[in-house]
Image (tube, rainbow, N blue to C red; front, side, top):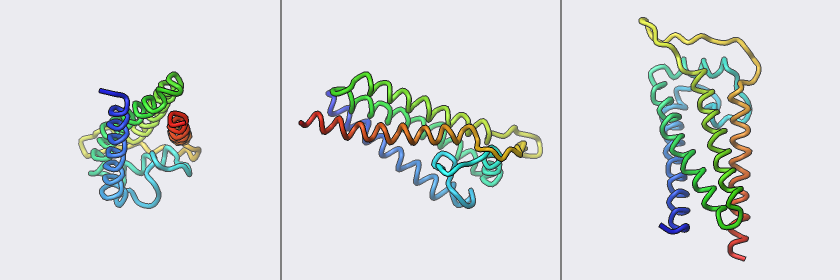
Length: 167
């Protein structure tokens, strides 16, 4: 396959997976989650306690939420990282690879931190999460901010690289 075909494939794959994740989150999960944004899209802050409360509110939908993070988001991360690397390949190949890897590492770390707080041990009488009382921003929140900063950087550099290629 040629570079333009791979670029198109991974760009479209990332866009379609992102659209599917948004659809599942907005139609199925967000109505049960209550007010506010889901943590992976909340740049305004969240605590470990709010993550545990989210898991409690989702209750029977929690496996869907978890699958969305584990499977769909992982596919998005892979597609977007490859898209970034391929789009920057002709102008800044090393930067493209490094940014793709950085984005993947940050987003996967954010997912792991969110899941570590929302996963609940199964007890005979149902799910039993331990609710933290800390009101400081969750460590996952800082990864959310970093994820969006790197994502915006990737997109800006993709636009700049495309302009350089065409010049």
